Amino acid sequence: MPELPEVETVRAGLAESLTQAKVTDVLVHDARSLRRHNAGSKDFISTLTGKTIEAAVRRGKFLWLPLGRKRGEPQLALMGHLGMSGQILLRSPDFEAEKLNRVTIKVKTAEREKLELRFVDQRIFGSLAIDVMEETQDGLPGGFAGTKDEYDWLNLIPSQAKHIARDPLDPSFDLDWVLKKFKSKDSGIKRVLLDQQVVSGIGNIYADESLWRARVHYDQPAATISPKKALALMAEVTEVLAAAVEAGGTSFDEQYKNINGESGYFSVSLNAYGMTGLPCNRCGRAIRRDAWMNRGSHFCPNCQKLRVSNRAK
Image (cartoon, rainbow, N blue to C red; front, side):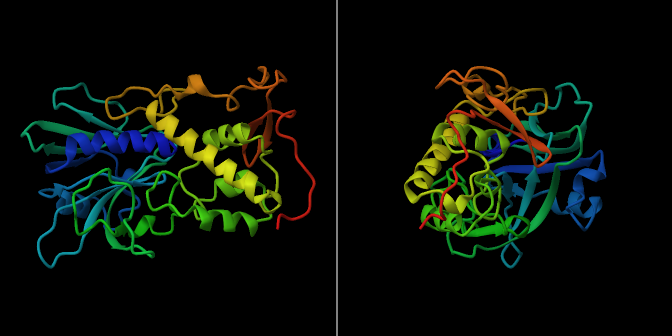
């Protein structure tokens, strides 16, 4: 599943190409990809056509494109979630058709170039929707937009993403709040890292990598981790996510692509995820994979031992 680095790679590409682009036409090839747009395909098409895309914004794995509006109109955004296998591709109109394209959004860029945003999704777990934006609970920007320009939607967030916590690469991320949440959780630390209401954007790949770097067992109860170790873990999380963004994300198959259809290459930097049976790059012992929550956890049993201790104070 695309995680924060993959979604940020897509966001940056969309921002560069689509800021101030105007939507000229919308084609819905498979309405199942609009299941989170409750008003249906016709409303999606009529509402989006003619709108101007003002930016591309991300919080965790959620991505949205704020739309221009007239005075008195509600602030809307085109909301995108990639799910397990969704791709947002930018193509020229004459580029060959993708077999699994579910929605085509035709635009004319600020430079008057014609492009097509194609939402390609093999398993149809992803979705597009037009959503009303609401004020953030903390009064701070809704997500990372990569722009210094002032917009009246900066401190707003789509209602469908309002429940999502901030991610470690968000300038408004509250590290102290997250560390306090750790102290209140008896669940294993990996489960907490993947709880999108505690901290967003971290999925299976980057959780395993961060825990390996911090030498923390995936099932160590969060509340038993010392403040010093918890701080070190979050530093590793931030560093791993930033490095993966720099590498364009992680691709193991044809499911994740950036807007140009290219794969990310952070996989060459992995130390734990997908390394089952290979020697640990730190101690030489074999990396192990345990079944975990219908997925797997990759770790070094020598470097990442489950420690029995009293609840951290």
